[in-house]
Image (cartoon, rainbow, N blue to C red; front, side, top):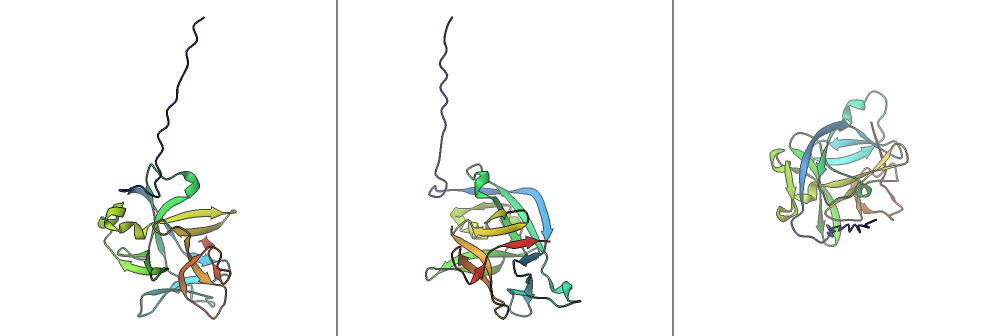
Length: 180
């Protein structure tokens, strides 16, 4: 009886340090609203184009921001990393994350959907990408792909309406959201 040895060769690549990552938009878009763990809804502050988290009183549900959540594919991202998504507020305004003075900033930035069809880190367009991870049954976190360890968050205080980026261990910030 002949014995055949089989050799399996697996190519690996460290995507966090590789040059030239490209993410392609997948034809799936989900329309959602976000509510943090304290039941604060995400709204758009009038006039200054800033996202805020507030407790909405009866009859003001129309103030909730409706997000378009678009999925992106990249062969180097494992399922354990989460889904790669872009969060759009309108057809041309999208959440982005940039660094300034060692701190990640949450921005609401204008960019055409066409420019976001294929996102490359060569052009610094990966600032629009977030890892969406589901925690438990219904809570989701959004971690910046470009700046790992920084999450979209709201304050744990009712009087602080700011939405910003924070580190996972910042006890004064909430990083989990329900998608409604």
